[in-house]
Image 1 (cartoon, helix red, strand yellow):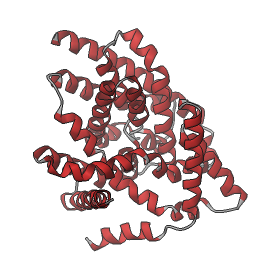
Image 2 (cartoon, one colour):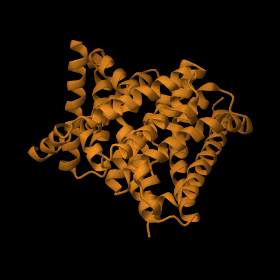
Image 3 (cartoon, helix red, strand yellow):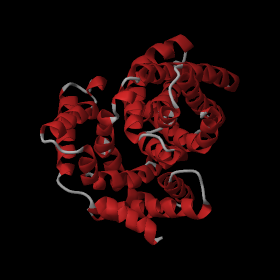
Length: 116
Length: 239
């Protein structure tokens, strides 16, 4: 329990650091992403924080679906103009995913062969 | 500094009973999903969100009030994104001699996944608002959400788009692996993580921990990589 609370506080701290850093440095990335990168850098230099973070981070990631419930519900309230374009949108999403996987497959075959 | 803290606090302080709707909806969704033996198309979010939509209509609660009441959940997405650094750092630590081919596949694959989506948006004649909302759809949702807010897209549309992308990715992956001859489960994991984010990563863990580890790497690193080139890539396509 103590580790969970401390871990969450560390994550909140890095989130705040990221938000503030993005403002100060006028970066074009989301604050939480900078926070994640900063934590990644800290962990790669010194992993003593890791034992404090494991419980909070695995709990948050396990239930991350819950955090998306409100924003995903918003998909039902997009209005008729966008809803009317759902077929085209679905075609883009599904088509581009298949092509991207196929492309990565080809790249991987090329690079893993030259590596062996 | 104060402004940022105020914004965060307002999100949390706005939370109230509609949050319960989300929790109940999600628990129901999770139960059905687990009972079904984890059938992908019964993803908890696919069950929870229509349930909540009907409930909101039934009790005549405005979506904006519901959304405001869920401020705590929305706020937690920030720390949850930061939390992705933990599994990513654990996997990076074990990153073997594959570093070079992995980086090439990741950089090219991540870039291609976004560009092909943007090209297709244009081909289908969809407008800029939709383009901005779909642009980061291969990226894991918490990062993608931040990117869409920054680009000025619609978060609800993005949330749906990432879900459809993830599900499409795991449905077709097996066939694509056969067609392209990618048999190594590490590479399969990487492809799943880059193109189908968290849904693909969950699927990769079903294959093996090793496959899942590479998916985790692919998802996390692609999130960072895409965030870096996305503003430029999108700039080329908006009219």
